[in-house]
Length: 113
Image (cartoon, rainbow, N blue to C red; front, side, top):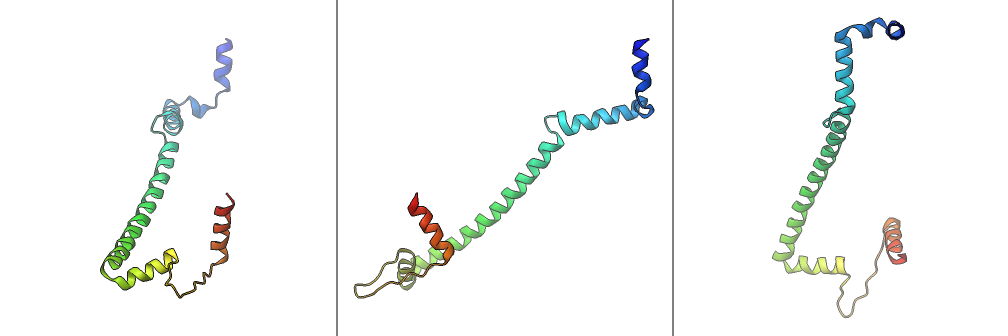
């Protein structure tokens, strides 16, 4: 008799076996399965991030190859690159480096470490 008291408290729509089957299936797919929806959404999000990173790096590789080709083919570009990137100068020259506030903060942080 006690067992029947609990069954009477269950809402009628949950007594329907089709609804119960769909509810159990939904819970199983969203939470319990190894390929559940939560991990699926997480994986899709990570895939999109990796695809955007891939696009960024392919563009970066393309520009770097172009710069490398320019440096290998023209001595004037090589000298310009050395002066800009490595602050090289001729014997009778002075170099003035103008930094943006953001670049200045980054250099300060690196030196303080």
